[in-house]
Amino acid sequence: MSLATALALAPYLALLGLMLAYSAHSLVLLVVHARSRRPTSAPRLAGEPHVAVQLPVYNEENVIVRLLDAVAALDWPRDRLTIQLLDDSTDGTTALAAPRVAQMQAAGVCVQHVRRADRRGFKAGALADGMLRTDAEFFAIFDADFVPPPDFLRRAMPHFGDARVAAVQGRWTHLNRDFSGLTRAQAMAIDGHFAIEQEARFRAGWFLNFNGSGGVWRRAGIDAAGGWSADTLTEDLDLSYRAQLAGYKLIFDRDLPCPAELPTTLAAFKAQQRRWATGSMQTALKLLPRIWRSQATLPARMAATMHLTHYAVHPLCAAVALLSVPCVLLPGMLAPTGPLWGVLLPFGLAMLGPTTLYLYARRVLGLPILPAFRDLGTLTLVGVGIAVSNGRAVARAFERRELAFERTPKLGVVRAGDVVLRRYGVAADGLLLLELGLACYCLCAAAGLVWTGVYAVAPFLLLDAAGLSYVAASGWLRQEEAA
Image (cartoon, rainbow, N blue to C red; front, top):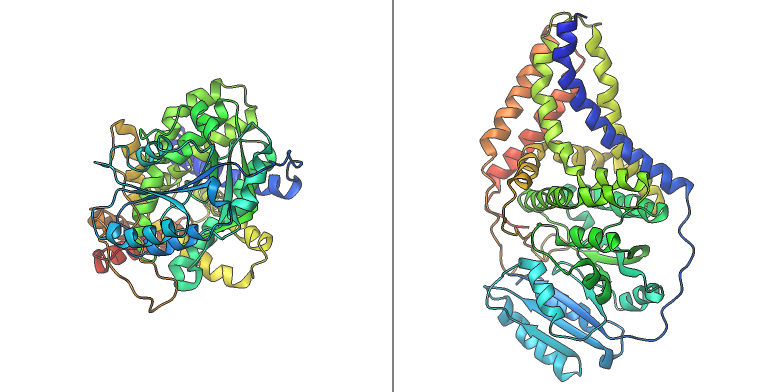
């Protein structure tokens, strides 16, 4: 290989190397989980302090009654429990909620139905506003798609015996895991995040994140971190890291389940992923300098960097697909046994980390392994297919401007045939032609490579083409639907 060819190939291999690094981090978390134990039990909180249950909602006709019924059944002394319905809705949600709130109040439950004049600060603004309306020391937070079990507070609150604990995060479980192939794939990814990634970070003493719902915060921890902030789209991730930088710690309890509804259409799933991708990168840009100046250990700082920038995998995937063909056409690269065969190894390893983590999570949670291979196929297809959408979402974080909070609408469905009160539209992301164009590029490139007898990257280009085509076709056929 000539020097010129090597230099031309370097950017491509550098991108592959970055993808490999994220995959390797998945394996690191898996090893940490397998080889370490949970921290020893901290002092348990005595007594029953005042807890405010905050329910930030915006246009949730399909699930608002289900949510209120669930929190009304929470097992906690009524004189030390305040429920705040932080209702920024502009549709019929408020009218549906009002009678149920009245029933709860008549039954002796302290319920505040809060209506703000505007949605300033979105979810972060609603939570901060709610804090001003109560003297509660602790705040349990549930999004509209969650159904907390009655014993949630009984199981979460004892963790606060250590005054340094700012928050306790439970493990998300799934109301509608088996609704479709898409929900099964999402459940697999979320299970991997909670059962392995969150647990491993907790065991290692690395930075941990509150996931926005299904957990409890201590007021003092929120205040020490500077309060809720709306300058990122992931206010939960931002506050989590700021609280830990302020000297507090977070606890993840894998045995504290909290069921939630998964998005049931690809349009809604993409919307959710776009918000998480932009918000994560915004948080990285905001806090990574502070993290690297902190007294945290080097492994903790490296893990935080991989965690906050994880969505960079998607633009990397799209860039690698685009660069594959020009690199194959470099002098000396067309021979079937040429140097590009070595690219197979990084490609394979890039998929190995997440795949192994998801399968290991099934084992940890006691779920059957064989069905996982079917769901892995769907998850891989969708993960590749949203590379363009999430790539643009990551890029938006660098605009350094205020962005609108894009909600993930819910249908309130658990089984096929469940009644849907209202279908909320999901705004088209405008990337259909770009996704189809990249899919055609990958398909034609793979066919051309096979025709010339070069097979090194053809399977991965075919995978890219299939994923992008699936996502683009779903967006075109069902763009009016919600999740």
